[in-house]
Image (cartoon, rainbow, N blue to C red):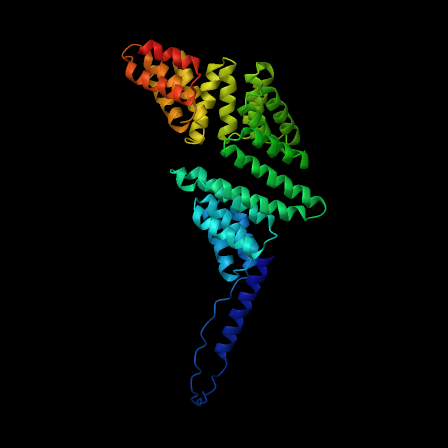
Length: 391
């Protein structure tokens, strides 16, 4: 229809033009010269700050943090008192590892709006991330104390809230406290904080995951399993919850239940390195070497730097197969990325202690890694035995 209408209009215009050409042309009347008006300077319309905030939220949720940063910065320049713009800008700066500017942005937000609980939580997160990302943690040693103080300020505000929002805010604050205690090495208080968060918000799968993770870190496998099972029930489609639950099932000896859970996690998120890699871990623990290698190899392709555990299990597969060269390469990566894990150092030492074919044993490197493992975990019996063998 549009094409036909356009055609008729063009045809009418052609006929009118032709008709005009057949009419006698009237003599032109000389026009009186008029002074030219000064040209107006075009002014670019200013978009409202809210438009840029909405754009920033869209980019942030897509994981496009550079674009989110630009949008939130534009919003904050248009309206320096826009709290949503400042919150988004601070969070984007953290994602881009601009920790100093992020802290300043979020401090400004909390001064501008002292009742903004989200602003306090984001500021506490910025302090934590600067601490975690620093190569010189002594230089930012006060960050974790500062984070706890900010969370205390947030709690004071949240206690004054009413309705359902109060418990939700307090659960977020206690969950964040758990993270800080974990970084401070206080596992007991971290567990208490996550438990308090879960009491306030019992169906939140993220809090249940964090609580289970701390139980596992302290050696309480059964409590960890229970918490992760609840997390899976709370959000059955979350691949992280299900993959971690599957690994804990395998570590508890329940391989029969673990493998289908791990496979389901990988199906739910085939590009999620954690889910894919844990399927590999569970497959290794169930002695399915082919599936383990395929899944672990895919996981480290998806995310080469985040999960040293997956290089460790690839190294274990290589050791089992007698491929010492590959074992040393994968275990070296594991020990470098997971530099505080004694088990990685021990198995790297074991790979150097052994020799096969053209790959000769290297007792000096074996000894160095056994010593490193013992430094990280002084009661590590296997490392002590290994060190006795190569001395």
